[in-house]
Amino acid sequence: MAARGVGLLTRLSLGAQRNQVQRALRRLLSCPGTVAADLRREEQFSGSAETGSEDRIPKKRFSEVQEERREQAQRTVLIHCPNKISEKKFLQYLSQHGPVNSHFFYESFGLYAVVEFCQKESVASLQSVTRTPSRGAEAAIPFRSRYFSLKLRNPSSQPSEQSSVQCSNQSSPSSKKLFELLCCAESVDDQLTALLKTFQLTEENTKLRYLTCSLIEDIAAAYFPGCAVRPFGSSVNSFGKLGCDLDMFLDLDEIGNFSAQKASGNFLMEFQVKNVPSERIVTQKILSVIGECLDHFGPGCVGVQKILNARCPLVRFSHQASGFQCDLTTNNRIALKVLSCFILYGALDSRVRALVFSIRCWARVHSLTSSIPGAWITNFSLTMMVIFFLQRRSPPILPTLDSLKSLADAEDKCIIEGHNCTFVRDLNKIKPSGNTESLELLLKEFFEYFGNFAFNKNSINIRQGGEQNKPESSPLHIQNPFETSLNISKNVSQSQLQKFVELARESAWILHQEVKERQSSNQPWGLATLLLPSVANNISFVKKRKKPASERIKNLLESIKSSSTEHPTDTNGKRAVNTQA
Image 1 (cartoon, rainbow, N blue to C red):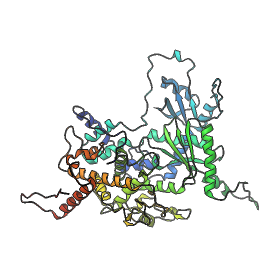
Image 2: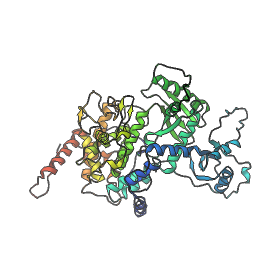
Image 3: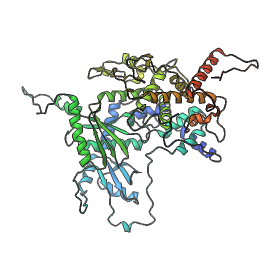
Image 4: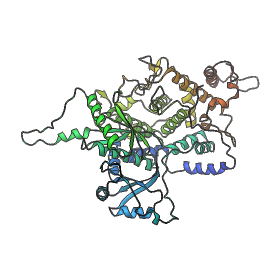
């Protein structure tokens, strides 16, 4: 089996820490509200999960949420602070420019503060008293952004006993802490829920993502007044984890809306523009210029790469202050519809996000996914596979995209570049699923289902929710939900797919074996077992078999399935399961 990636979980001796960690886990899992409620609040407020109402009807559309977050970000500043600072004096100083609505500190190449004023005018007031620094022999580019550095006039006059401010955590918990939480849970369902609550984006992290987009928007607006830079992808689709990349979308549609102004008399005024042969060339030219600006003028923007010949042209860079790896695209409206679709699916059932988080974590631990472009399975593909699997349950947990389209009304109709992207957006019109299967069962059967899926002939598509002959020879075929002629997993190689299949089979086997062997005081179990460096290491006779692991496990799963339906028994009255391969 292929070597695992770095950062894998290791065995730990829990011992006396067990009770303490169990109490922490119970506090974590006893937060008011369910996972479904968390996501409905997320759709209302940001894309971050918090506790909230059990009301099934979102109070606001996602577009309204994004506009509120964008306006909030425009009243917010990012400040690089000295390591030792008085929080009280810091806020008093900023309050000279207007009341502060909220703030938090975090660490990323130094100490930073995110400060949200109550009024946008306060930002302008702060900018008016801010000077361009003198760098001695170097020259500074006089760019007036909302990213500041705070200096102390007399650092030596600060009290020596002054302690650092409390920082908000912007990164995922350590492997050790996560492992302790999982081992001390009371059930596999609790393990999946704990993983979700531990890794999901916090309110502070979501604010930082919108602020970073807003800072990039300030640069783009120098060329395109009225444009908007919005986060999309994992940052807001409800499946993002702490530390995930920040995907940005440069939205220029609002500029075109200016032409909707009421005509005066018999005259119609139009802007003089430069014409080019295609929309793709427009996108490439715009991103080329924005990329140059980020590289030359963008404070904290480093490692800028202009990847303009990709199917979807983009600018990739690191935003040092926030710590985010960023991808900026434009004219990518279909991606925004996929985002809205994922938010809807995540809100329909509380099990969806927990299962997606666990599968993504499992894939990351075993190097099935990677932040480096290549022949890997992507998180996007894994999420589509989870949705497809949940559509195949009996009764289905999630509806097909075609059924959501049939429930849509005129307000939901959406055609983008000739592609029908229509689906119902009102959760109240969608009948809740009658399926009551546990997360533990779903996790086991996800691995069993795809461990035995006929990838050589069948494709995965969430529009119809059924297995269909794939239209091309790629090892893995997952249909784009809206651009149906595209395969979103075309990059995946046969070796990477085979690695996924073998790991899925072994994981299903382990979870089936543990039905009678629940957790002990100091041994990993359930989801924790699947996140060890090699799931095969926990089964001693795996290495003793002569046949390949994948063949042995497939035969075992088939025997388990047949025994569960036929219920054969041996002479002692016990159920006989053939483990011979």
